[in-house]
Length: 140
Image 1: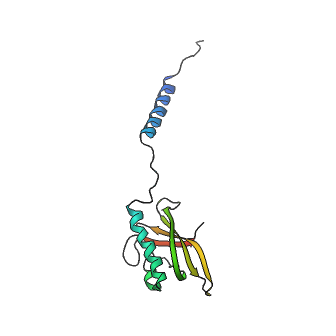
Image 2: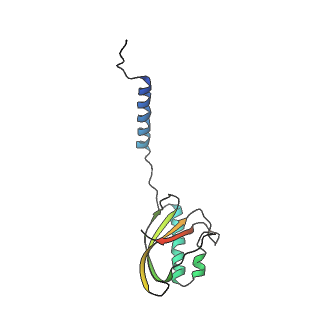
Image 3: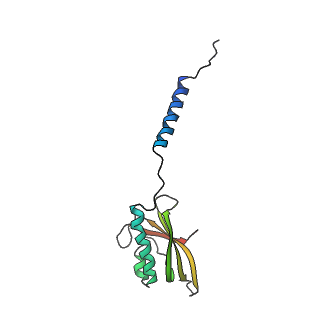
């Protein structure tokens, strides 16, 4: 009976394959999603204009920034807002824009909260433009 002491051809091929994959990813590392790409820049205008319309009392115009078929969510009596951050939402295809917003409850009590405006860069709004809002939620 002959004792095997060497490395088999399959093992050598496997090692070469793993080394090639590692070398490829070292030379071409995956790029993080850049929230400042053209979609993000274009869609930031949607988020800003939505809040601007709420601040100026034009809630009917604010609704037009929402994706067709989605029930718009609005904030009451927006008096001021400040952009905090933006980037890609968990799915990697939706963008988020976080704002600190001074507004009020439906009963008129002043509040300041952080809100996330979620935008789909590929969806059409009621205005017929890309970058439609698909959700408004309290920021985490």
